[in-house]
Image (cartoon, rainbow, N blue to C red):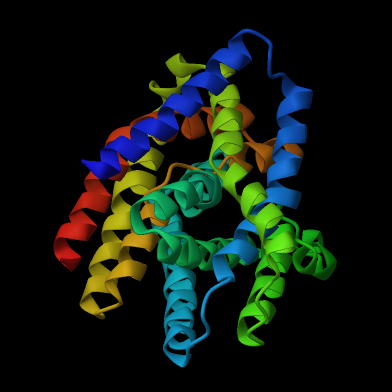
Length: 304
C-alpha cells in the first residue's frame, strides 16, 4: 500500500507538470533550464547527501556488490534489447533498443527509493545512477549515434552524475563529515530531486501524442520489456545469488522505472525516430503507475 501511495504522490506531481505544460506555465525553454538545474545542481547534491553516512568495511563490500549488480542489470538489458528488436528501419531500431535499456532511474526511482527504503535506498539508488551514467554516456551514446567518435573522456569525467559520486565517495572513504552549514544547503537542494523532475516529466507528457503512443506495436513490445521483463529477470537473478534484500528492492525500483527521458533527447540530437521515442516515454510512464507498485511489492514479498 505504501508503494502505491508513493507512486501516486509522484503522479500527482507529474499531473501538476502536465497542467503547467498545457497552460503554458512551463515551456520548452523553462523545461530545459529546469533539467539543467536537476542535472548540474540537484543530482550531485543527491549523491553527496546519500554518501554522508558512517563508514564501515561491511558497507564497502555492499557497495561493490551493488556496482556489480547495477552493471549486470544494464548489460543484461542490452542483450535482451538486441534479441527482441529487429526493425528494418535503423531509426526505429535504435530508439526501441535504447528505450528498454535505459530506465528513468534518476528522476523516477530515487524519490521512491528514498520514500520506501529511507537513506539506504537513497544510497544504493545513487550507486545505480552512477553506473547508469557510465553506460549511457559510453554505450548509449555510440549506439544511438552510430558513431564511436561521439565518445568523450571529458564528457564522461565531467558528467554531473559521475563527478557527484566521485566527490561523495571520496568524502565517504576518507570519513569526512561535512559541517552543518554546508550539509544543510546540500540536503535542501537534494530534496528538489522529487518535485522538479516530476514537473519536467509532466511537461513532456503534455506534449505527447497519446494516440500514437498506444497504437504502435513496437511501442507495446518496448513497454512490456522495459516495465516487466527486465525487472523480472533482474529480480530472479538477484534472489538466486542471494543479494542483500535492500539492494534487491532498490534495484527493482530502478529497473522497473519507465523509459528514460534521455531517449527523446538523444533521438532528436542524432536524427532518430523522435515521435516514437516520445510515445514510448509517455506510454511507459503512464503504465508504470500500475507496474512499479506490483513489481516492488513482489520484490519485498520474496525478500521478506
